[in-house]
Length: 482
Ligand code: HEM
Image (cartoon, rainbow, N blue to C red; front, side, top):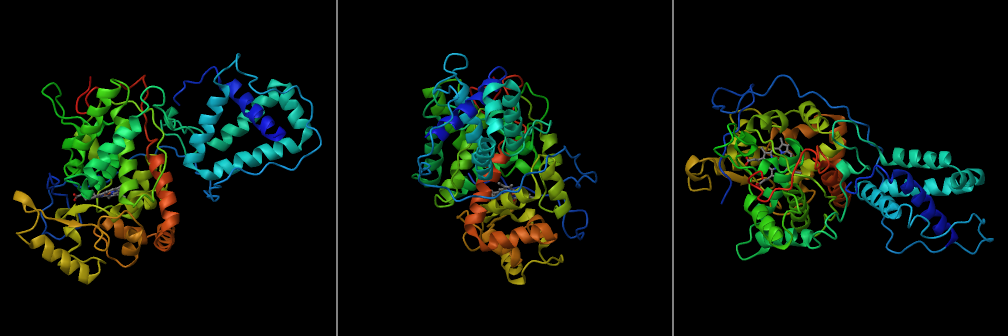
């Protein structure tokens, strides 16, 4: 008990230092014609602009600490056996209640966010406390002097990671000042309202699991262009000269917009002007992952994003990886967003659900050479040439991305990669480097490992380029700026 009190007080001390500057918030898809890669045989007719030869410039990325997941402990640790009376240091509970009332809350939020992103950090903090207390001199100094207090802050911040300066905050830190439970007190039912809208779309009367896939992809496409700021939701208007992101080639097949509209309408009814569209997209992506994984992929999504005012179709191709990307390009494009190779491989597992248009992978079908399993290639060719299928007027049919469990978010994707039963060159490319290949085989073997990593990577992606009140707004309608 005494140790717990010391921990709280130490953490509260950290909070006291951060108090001043703390801000407190921390229809079927439209058929598309994907471009063919430049090396394709002339039999295909590429309409996609040729991939840029210069890769996007890389933002500096701080190396992620190795992630180890200690098993979650369902019960609180049992109290330490009675020890000699604690050192009398004049400590008391609620020490900062008047000088910095939010001190403990601030520290709690910081730790919560860090641990949700990387459970290993929680273990690190417990160890930090232990090491600190066992050097008696340090604890006394920590209690007595601001200098020692600052040292603890420094170590804590180092453990939590720090911003790399490009707006993205590395794992473990509070990305863009986001917090779990951000709408508590301002719109208590915010997350519940979004979840109901997603549930209704997936499981309701006209339930469509495909919309769930669409929502996960929507979150990805939002975050990769202008950051997670709902820029992908903006409609074209007469006032805007330039076409919005929605009109960009990779976004023509996005779906799920109406689910976001439904959630936002309900939110505006309950707490107008409070919940950003960017957070709705993030919550919806999280909830879709939860529902489509059979409740296996569950995580808290930090929130507090603001909505952007800039949305340009011209920014989609340079920022969203094309289906014909090779492994180096994929790595570069994710790194440009502060996401590492592991994140890239982990997030690609979303291709275990949803559909793809034939035009997105026709470059891998005969007569073009590819490493695709011949049986799958033959089946796809048949589905893609069938006129009675689901291609609509354009004749660009859609097929399931995962033939085995098309509606279930699971690790089958990685088994498909191993057995060459994936659609895109970018999927197959994960076998092309030792690092990605080894991740693929370990995810293929462990569903649980992948689920945990996927949850953490979704949170990490949700921290990309987050906007604040300084450069964003809370939109009243998700399709239009205020
Ligand atoms: C690694 C680079 C990636 C590439 C090159 C890529 C490319 C694509 C393409 C071309 C499609 C099919 C579009 C169509 O033809 O209609 C697609 C579908 C999809 N992608 Fe990705 N993607 C990537 C990463 C991701 C990530 C990170 C996520 C989410 C975490 C994701 C989630 C999805 C989902 C769920 C679908 C199915 C959507 C639906 O059924 O409406 N993808 N992707």
